[in-house]
Length: 147
Image (cartoon, rainbow, N blue to C red; front, top):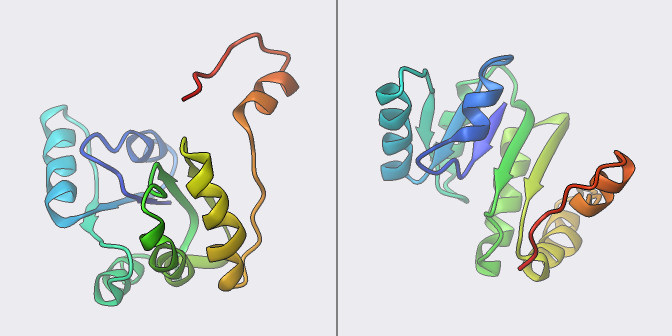
């Protein structure tokens, strides 16, 4: 499992680490802070620096796994449309053939552009999963905040 843009808490990585090998990535200073934060809370987190589009850093991250990652996680990384192409390239480099990327995004206008254009440009297909539809399918009356 690889988390892109883990932030200082790296919560998805910490949860996933309970069942799989995980690498959490973010900008260099944030990756260091995430590892320190995890250690301060007696948690283990393997973090590595990664800026989207940095091929040298992407290679180092990929080499830390056997053949790429089966599952890529990211949340709120699509706000800057100027980074969409390099994020798509990063996914392509780091993802294993047949792998899965799960990206959560609150800003649906920029996300739509990423999924329809940037991923299509590298030959990936995308499927939108709306949380409201998930709640409805589960028969839940829970709600999700909207912006």
